[in-house]
Image (cartoon, rainbow, N blue to C red; front, side):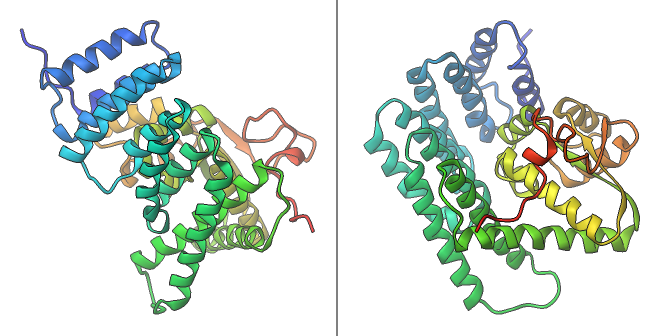
Length: 342
């Protein structure tokens, strides 16, 4: 009996199992066989299957094999996918930097660079590739220049009233650029500057907006959904577009939640807590409700139904208690907000 074609749900399940399977290369063999025998149900998902296989080789240290599969994924993505998306090419460029193929990698990333001012997920993909390849200073320069362009567009744009999806996206691009720049500078031990101050103000503003909305809905008892590092990284590997909802990286995810909770508390909200999410549980919930785990309605229902069932951490912890994010550090040494240094 012929094997059934692999659907997106099948590929998601394979991605989830790769970290725990005893023989990931057997899984890779199955993926590549499905690609080579046209058994991927949606041709637009061929690049996804190839990137899953590439990740296994990358983790094993065989960067050349990973790069070869990433190159096949780029071709498949350009043929069947959405060419504007940056992830396959940025991933390949990151591998090429690690292989010492700097000229080709930087040329490819330069072609993607324009996406920095319009696509929040591209900010994470491109800068991570540069940082992992030893070009953190270049990543900071690119992000700084993109932030300047994005800010100029905001200042020069027409102010709208009411909800404006394009304006919201532009604002989130500015937010993401500012936070990513701040992180890149902090990782290199650089002192805060005016743009770092802007990043802090934007964090506070995001929290304040969240607080106002939540207080209006319900003055008591709010739980926010938190993804531990492994789950967060898996979630974004499965669906990079979720960076818009949860942050471009785990540090930004924690920061967004912390500042949102701080502002909720400042507005008088009580009963605050962090619910610890699980990608495996989210995928099972999506299966039960018959939806895609990345859809907002499915994620919202997962949070609603998980209230009272998911592990819950009261917020805030004491200054000398373990941080709610699970880092192992004390709260005061980790996520507790601190005023910017002079």
